[in-house]
Image (cartoon, rainbow, N blue to C red; front, side):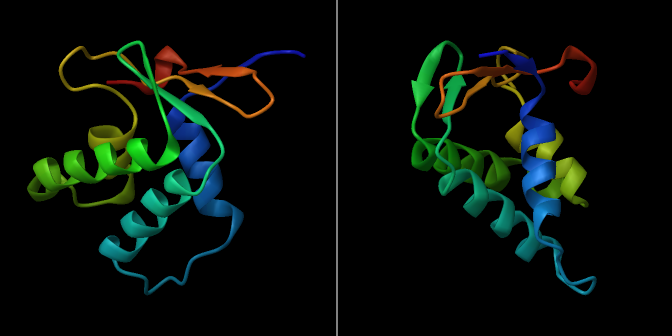
Length: 111
């Protein structure tokens, strides 16, 4: 099966836009929705070389959100600061889909 290279950012954004959100939805509701999408996915999340379940990934993203909350003003800030890469190593988080193909983060989407 052909492997595709995308970032976790693209995965989360595409999930978010798969079901249109209300325009009046708050930032907190949007972030909660995005974290729930991660938690309910069937993907394996790889953080600093270690595989994690969707529930573990969601919990880690929640902890990072709590840490960066004062800096997060938009969903894009949330994705950039909490859901796309390790703040310690600076490495993007790859994702492995259920069929086994890996999604490697695209270097152009990380800061």
